[in-house]
Length: 231
Image (cartoon, rainbow, N blue to C red):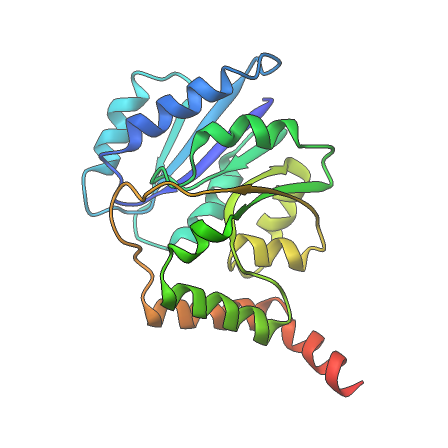
């Protein structure tokens, strides 16, 4: 398999067909790609997403779908997507059409080799549209961890080699934090996010706080802080 496009799915019944068609059309522009797959895992949605995926599976032969028996969250579901992917190259994007599939061509053409990650970073105008609370959170997390998390997204292209390393990690946090912990080499694609198809983000203060805790503790950023200030 040459290319996998993967995404966790949660309460996205109304945009799934549009997502799949956009991915298909953009992968079709990559004339060198002869075989690809789209891997979508429903994270126990409480809408009709799973039935919609089953319907779409009958229309698109390249679509692979899976259903989790309980909700485990976006980042753990993403790791499960990587486990199912069979492509030598893997593109990761959100299912709600914020990550426009039109950028697939740019990601693919920027890819130099299996040791480099191509990752999406929001242009500043798109980042500030996330709201003051979100801006404060990412700036604060960057400050306390001594790592730059401002504007980075899950929209990325990684090799199967790097995917296997992510899968082996004991704890999964935000994709970019996990890639930092693996000391990956990066190339950045700057892009503007589209309006979220399904409405507001599900991340509240409590979820973001626990999310930050996991990033700092499980990626050993306290080690870097202690080393910088006390060595």
